[in-house]
Image (cartoon, rainbow, N blue to C red):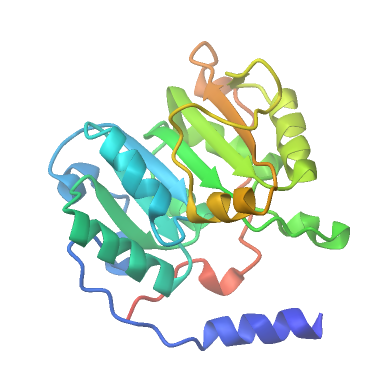
Length: 244
C-alpha cells in the first residue's frame, strides 16, 4: 500500500510538458459537451482510443480509415506529447489527442450513442488478485460504454493476460446490448488490426495477445440497457487532468 501511495504521489507531482500541437485538445474544452464538428471540421463518425500510449496504434488506424475521426486519450502527459509529435510529423489530420481519464470523459463530455468504435489495447492488467478491482474494464464500465456506443458500433479490447480476457468476455456475455463478432470468446489475431507498441513487445517475448471484438446490438434500444454506473477512476486525481 505504501508503495502504491508513493507512486501516486510521484504521478501527481510529475513535470507537465506543454503540448503545442494543433492536434491536442486542452482541458478547457472539456468544460462542456464536446462539439465534435468544431474539433474536426466535419461530421464524420467518431472513434475513441482509451490509452493511446505513444500513438503507434492510432496513427495506423487513422491511416486505414481516413473517413473516420479519432479521439485518442491517455492520462500521461508524455504519452500525449509523443502521440501528437507523431501525428504532426505524419501530417495526419483525423486524430485529436486529450489528456483525460476515460470515465470522466464519457460522463462529462460525450453524448450518448456518439461513438462508432472504442479501442482499448493492453490496459494495466493489475495482475494481483487483490488489485483486480482497479481494472478499467469491468461490468460497470462495459454497461456504461453500451450507452455511448452508437447502435452497430464496435468495441475492441486486447490484453496479454488470459484471465483479464476471460473476465471481460464473461461480463460481455452477461450484458444486454453486445454481440460477439468472433467465432470464439476471443482470438489471438485480428486481420488488419494494427499492432501497438506494447503488443509488439509482448509478441517479441513469445506472449500471446487476446483480442475481443464485440458490437453494440442495434436491436436493443438504449432505454433497455442496464443503467450506467460510472465509477470514479482508481487514480482519482486524474479525473480531469491538468494540462498547464
